[in-house]
Image (tube, rainbow over all chains, first blue to last red; front, side, top):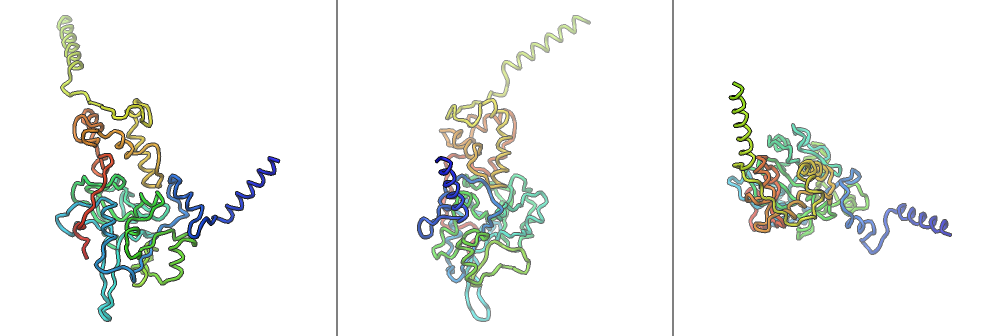
Length: 243
Length: 132
């Protein structure tokens, strides 16, 4: 009896695993609930985190994403020279000179699959996690700023002054290069990056590019998207729609 | 000659005892806010805390393994002084007291937040370089 029970349980487990997910309610699957509560086992190379920015929704003059990023990552210091300011995320307004068509978009680290910043780093401080998030190891960053020069997106910045206002989960300090981390501390907890969550227009979509069932993959299949400086063949993780 | 040697030896011994007795450097004041709840016995922590932290930092940062037993933020939450909420600030603060005594420079706090329960302040105006 117990033998047959075990077999039945085994069959059910195998069936559930084979199906890949169990639908609880529209949009909510058992696998997502389980993933949200489980402690983070670490970055997996089966996942490739990415973002899709819909520039047709992004409002000119709105900088909610920038404010949310500053708050989340403890970027509160005032810099003497605006050119020394943090560049985790910034808003860019584009105007087509011929037609006058305006675009507004957030620009940040594009989390390339082949990141030039990692190529040029002499100490190995610039690195790419298994899940595609490009980070700086501040413990071994010597502040040479090669990566800042190598980045085609001007997405990295250097901390020029001593800091005391860091967020506990986002260490950053004098003499190191830094950039958007895709809010890696939130992503590891199963949350979205702060900018994505804060966007009042819902113009930013974050998700797993490797998972064909993810919202971002479905959207990328539907709409035309652009990789900024696609000619460099960096296979970026952040894509834009509408430019 | 032998007598002189004995005299010097006695003097040296006396000086040694005097030094050990009253050092010019005050002993560190280690005040444990939450005794008994550390991740390892005190002897092990004293000798190996830096190794544990370094090992875990690479796992967390490079591999995204979070929620481990060893965590710098965990140290701060437990060991921050009740007086100023920090592990730094004076000779009686947990990290600073021992490190000042041992003359070992603390680099952690150049980047990490030394205050327990610190909430990053919200800014109305983003710092320079942001505004389009």
